Every structure is written in C-alpha cells, then in structure tokens.
Image (cartoon, rainbow, N blue to C red; front, side, top):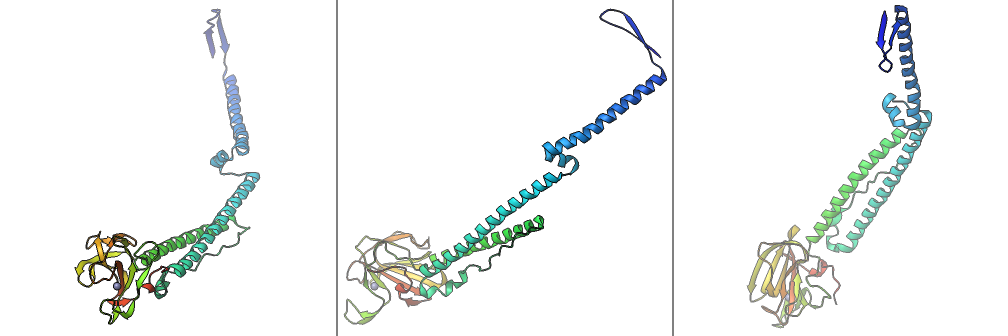
Length: 304
Ligand SMILES: [Zn+2]
C-alpha cells in the first residue's frame, strides 16, 4: 500500500510505502505502549493515591497500607477514648441529678408528704463503664455505643421523673399565700373564739396583712368557688390534685374567675377584713378529702 500526500507549506508531493508486515509491527508496538502505560499508571497511580490520598485508594481498591491501618487504628482508639470520657462525664452528671433530686426531696417536700414523694425517686441503676478493650476496637466501640444508649435512656427517664416530681410538688399547698415575711396572728386548732370568747376550733391559720395585700395560690389547681358569707366574708376555694383544697377568706377582692386553672404562685386577689374578722388578715385553710389539716404542716415557710 502506498500513501501520497501534499505538504501544504512547500507544495511537495510525498509518499510512504506501507506493507502488511510494517502494519503488524507498528500495531504491536502501539498496543504494547498503550498496555505498558496502563500498567504503569495502575501501579504508580495507585501507589501515589495510597501515599498522598488514602481515601482515593480506599475508593479504588478498598486497600490500606500498613502505616495507614496503624494510623486509622490510633485514630479510632483516640475517638473511643474521647467517647468513654464523655460517657463518664455524662454518668457523673446523672449521678449529680440523682443527688439533687434527693436534696429536693429533703428540703422542698413537707414531712407529711415525704412518703408519697418516694415514687419520684430516680432510677438508681446507672451503667457501669466497662474497661476499654485493647484487643478489639470494634468490640469496645459497640460497648461504648450500647452504654451511651442506656445512659441516654436513663437520663431521659430521670428528667421526666424530676419534672413529674416538681409538678406534683407544685400541686400541693406548700407555697406561702403571701409574699415576704409571714406574721401569724392565729394558729390552727382549738382556741378561744376572739369574738365570743368561747372555746372553739380554728380550721386554718390567720396571717396578718394590711387590707389590699396581694395573695397567691399555694398550689396549682382550679378555682372551684368564689362566694361571700357572714363567717368568711369574701372567700375563694381552690381544688388541687390528690384531694387537696385551699380556702382564702376575709378578702377585699378576687382577681380570678370561677373554673380558671391556676398555677402555684399565681396572683389571686387582695386580702381584706370582710366577714367575721377582728382585723385585716388572710384566713388560709388547707383540707384533704374534706379533713382540715394544719397548713403549717405543709407550708414551706418560716414564720415570724
Ligand atoms: Zn381564721
């Protein structure tokens, strides 16, 4: 086979003779060069990828060099140690939560309700940290993950439990109905009636307060009665959880409506001197399932 072509620059006609043998030799050389290049690229390229960017090597061939494996292992162990430290720190925080809950029970729960509050004690089972397994990072990681999940569950339960406990406490008449220092004019129980001078029973406590003093809900609950009578004057009755009710009497004004839901500490109105009263004060009564209870057994106050 002869190929002719015209050189564009000088206009000369050139020719080349191609024989079958020449064609075979040229093809063989070309194929060899291409194959050689491919193999070289595969070998050196892969080596380069491993050395300079292991992620590419991993993607290409799922292979690791010994150095890389060692580095990975060290990294895993470092992260695992961090996880274990975090786990320990979380465990200690939950332990503190447990202690705080205990403390709350001691200082914010009236003695007569202490037994009922036992059901709010926090779970005492806390996951023990297992020693880091040096032989199997994977095993140690799975243990850590398991402990983390357990710790998380425990802390969620504890937060719920603590929230329920606080809501329970807030539904009990334990908060003083007046702000500031409490001056008690008359206590609960048998006394000489200040009006008739006859022996009588005082079903609540009288807290001295000038007319117009704001008073507040001792517990969360519902306003079940706003009324007026010659004995109590203007009065307010609140119903709380677990059979508790509170009465606020001799009032000047009431700022809430019957049927309203009230939070512990909500403003209810002002104290006065209405009804059978010898002077301005708030008559505060606590009942449970109809039985009169000395409010001082429940109120978390220090009296003057
Ligand atoms: Zn009274």
